[in-house]
Length: 91
Image 1 (cartoon, one colour):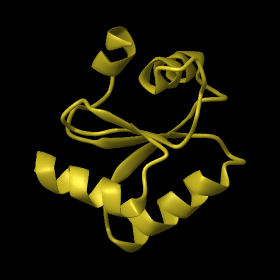
Image 2 (tube, rainbow, N blue to C red):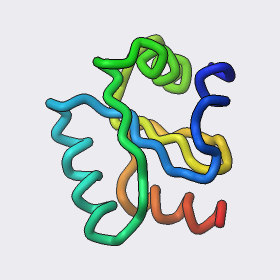
Image 3 (tube, rainbow, N blue to C red):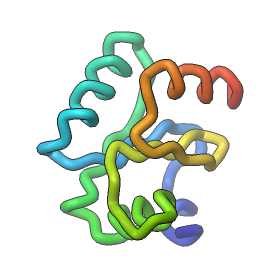
């Protein structure tokens, strides 16, 4: 997990998702509408990203959305309020 994470821009919120994920689509809309910049990574197109998500989830599943925050912490399927709170804490 550390190898993949080291390739990510440490100052950017990263959302790991899939094209069919309804929760991901909703969270992307909310982030966009609030002007919160993020990078999206499709785990179906990037095996290393999928492995990162599996390890971040800690239960052997590739649950999305999984977010990697600028401080390096992760959250699995967070609410928009949780994302905003976490970003405020790391700012």
